[in-house]
Amino acid sequence: MTLELSHKYNDPHLARRSWSMDKHIWSLREKHHLLYQIKEFQDAKDKASTPKEAMVALIKEQQFLAGLHQQVNDEDHSQEVINSIQKAHEAQQLGSMTKLHEAARYAYKEKMITPNDLTDHLKLSHSVNDIYNNINQICYKRHCQILTKHCNEIQKGDVVEHQGHKFDCIAEYLEHWKDNVHHDMLPIKQMNKQIDRVHEMQMEQSHERHMSMDMPDM
Image 1 (cartoon, one colour):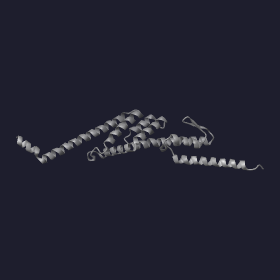
Image 2 (spheres, helix red, strand yellow):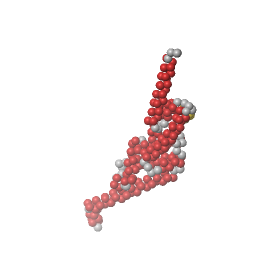
Image 3 (cartoon, helix red, strand yellow):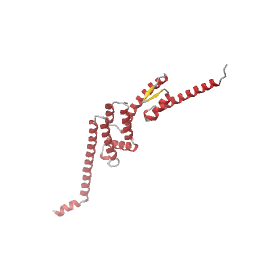
Image 4 (tube, helix red, strand yellow):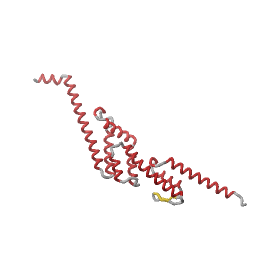
C-alpha cells in the first residue's frame, strides 16, 4: 500500500493535475479576496455622508487598485476590474488624485458646489479623471457667470469686490483671477483677449491725451 501510494504521488500526470488544481484554487481565492476588497471600498463610499469621508474612501480605493497593477493575472478577472486597476494606475502616475483633492477643496471652500452634491460626485463609480473633470466643469461654468457679471458692472463704472479686494479696472480684475485660480477652471483665452483689449484702449486714450496736450492753442 505504501509503495502504491508513493507511485501515485510520483506520477508526473497526477503531479501536473495537482499543481493545476492548486493554481486554480489559489486563483479563485485571489479573485474572491479582490472582489471582496473592492466591495468594501464601495460600501465605504456609499456610507460617506460628507465630502471628507467620501474623499478618504476614494483615496483608499484608488491606492488599493493602483497597487494591483501588474500584480494580478488579467485572465483571472473581469474586464471591468482590469480597467479599474489600469485607470487607477494611470491616475497615480499622473498625480490625478492630488488634482482632484485640490479641485474638491477649492469647490467646497468657494461654495461652487453644495457639500451634498460634492459628496455624491466623489462617491460615483467613475475614474478619478472623470470625477475631476466633472467638478472642474462645475467650477468653470460658475466662474464664467461671476466673471461676466463683474466685468459688466466694472464696464458700467461700478467697483466690484472679490476675495477681499476691490476692482474698478477689468484688466486688473481678470489678472487677479489668473493669479489665484487654477487655469483649467477659467476661460483663459477669452480673459487674455479681454485684458489685451483693455490695454489697447488704455494706450489709445493715453495717446489721445498726449496728442491733445501737444496741440497749440488756437
